[in-house]
Amino acid sequence: MSFALRIEYLTGRCTATSYNDRNTAEWPPHPARVFSALVDAWADGDPPDASERAALDWLAELPPPAIAASGRSERTVVPHFVPVNDVGVLKAFAEQRDKLDAARAELAAAETALEAAAAVGDARKRTAAERQAVKLMKAFDKKRAGLASLLAKDQGPDDAPNAAAIQRARSVLPEARTRQPRTFPSVTPHEPVVHLVWKPDPNGGHYRALDALARRVVRLGHSSSLVWCRVVEAAPAATLVPCDDGPVTLRVPAAGQVEKLVDAYRLHQQVEPRVLPCRFQRYGAPADTGVRPVHASVFTDEWIVLRQVGGPRFSSTLTVEVTQAVRAALMSHAEDPPPETLSGHREDGAPSEVPHVATLALPYVGSAHATGVILGMAVVVPRGITPEDRRALLRAIGTWEAATRIHLGDEEVEAPPVQVRLGARGVIELERVLWGTPPLANLRPATWCRAARTWLSATPVALDRNPGNLYARDAVEARAAHDNAAGIIAVACERIGLPRPERVEVLPSVAMPGVWKARAFPPFPADSRKPQRVKVHALLVFAEPVQGPVLVGAGRYYGLGLFRPVGGAGEATP
Figure 1 (cartoon, rainbow, N blue to C red):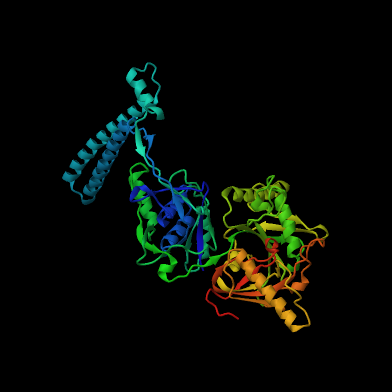
Figure 2: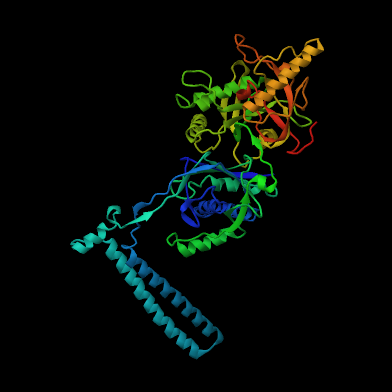
């Protein structure tokens, strides 16, 4: 079991200074930096949430996370001369405040001594302590009055300012401040998304609190490093993993990290330069630790899952019809014109030649009593989608849900049910699954995306070309058609970025409970004027584990060719 914190850099750039070199950018973001950002989000609560604090303490005690991050391009560091904060203007106030704090501490110590003398009944010591306390009280009141007078003088209006007062007031403005050289080292990651992956003991009780914290994190590093974070169930293959003798040293949190950060904040009050508490952990590439990387396709595990909550239930044989209806409803709420990665078409109307958003129907398969009924839908984001296109997708879903809120007259419901019309078949209602809500197994991305060597088709593959007569009476002709179909599927795997399977079997029937035979599915495409695709079920076996989702064939953007992993990453093949 694992979970990951997904971090997307919205500007495509990471500006964060290395803790030990102000001219070097930090990449990937150190787990301790990320943890500090989560703590900051918790501390901003009013009051801070106890369940979130418990989740942070639990996270700090976990072993260091693995990291999935791309390479990066570094920008040449150039000094920028910027106005410094108005420390000169506020220097007198800061000095007076420090004196007041010192007087307060002396007074507290005198009061403690007085209480101790009274407790033991020593009259002489008590009298001396009382005199000292009175003396310090007068000194404290004097310093407090001095600070109040200084504040009143600086903040109050000056009816007749002299030249010095005017100059002092002007010095607050940025153009009049002293300029000091500053550097802002940054990198441009090849892929502006990072995953921090933990493998804890099963404890789902903290995931929702962590996700609530992650969604409130808006930056990592400099204020220009805007991010969008959330907790996900699966992640791409790690590029850095903890090891004893790795070449990279990163800062990671440790047990009690929250309290250490709180103490550090009390000390520096966001004013003094500081190095936040942490511990250091060596990291190396998976190959350095004997862990083999996992191949992943052009599709990600970043799914928006919609479970069916109303309307008639349909079998997975209607996958294409239902996914097309969902896609049409989504497009009707998208901006005009929608981006190519959402519509699947270029500006001239021709089919897109780049990976785009896929829509899946998630069937009830794989268990002893599975029926093959569609339980819900998933909108699957392709790898490499730009932040602008991702926001366009989210805006489309948000607009769709907003229309339902208006109809219901309830602006507070977070995930209102949306309607999908399927003509004479009726209307179904779908509700977006919120993180922390435990859906059925077949609605979980991890069910379809976990790494494995062996995969079975849950919906048939629509072959990209005709393999020949799979049901020919002549055994040689039928065998040749099956071999052709296997080769077509192997190429289809390569087309989505996976390695070529070491074994492809075209199955004469189904091999998983709840799966319908290929011939039970309607023709694809539905338009009889277009070439009709041959549909087959298949078994895939890869030499190394691959990460899902595995979606292959001509109907992959409409839910055909959806495979489910069998066994674990190193399982024996059937």
